[in-house]
Image 1 (cartoon, rainbow, N blue to C red):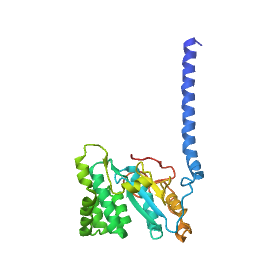
Image 2 (cartoon, rainbow, N blue to C red; image 1 turned 180 degrees about the vertical axis):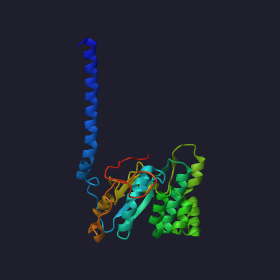
Image 3 (tube, rainbow, N blue to C red; image 1 turned 45 degrees about the horizontal axis):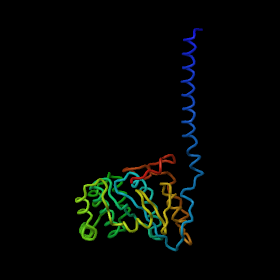
Image 4 (cartoon, rainbow, N blue to C red; image 1 turned 60 degrees about the vertical axis):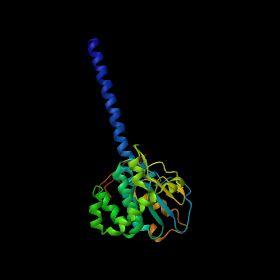
Length: 253
């Protein structure tokens, strides 16, 4: 065999070896990842302060795909435990995704504040219909007059639109929950906290439920109910479409 042929064979074997190694690790990643995840705790194992009625805050931006991912998992937990704990959607103290984000942050704030019994249905509709506030007002039955009054009060109290339009920066302040965000050391969307302490949690309904239930002095019977274990998908779209293998951990900010 000539020296040139031997060199070609060596190169071919080297390339094939690299392909085999990459294939092995790729297959191993997808096969083993669900097993590894099954042994990971659903939330960061901190000593969460306990109370009779936990105070729970999820800080988001309404157009951040990862904030929407968190809300998809958060909504079933609000519906399950909302009568047992003070569970809120709150806001990162700045806007990153333009004026539509400011407008819908305001819409979230006012529906939650004035028509809380319709809030989770409104959030579901908003997320599953690509952020269509107009559609969700009709579908959910939001009281338009009450909502408009609240939006006007937001402008009087916080001057959010005036501040946004007078700024020439890509990231502009959003002051509604700014003081609370400092308490929880919020650094992006989503950020999550319980009873004054930041908590890192996987973005599944069951993981969030378990974190909140760990904060009760005496967990209610609802804590024994198992919610969706799958990690939600980022962005707009249907709730519950993720899998155990969905990626979790992205942040806007």
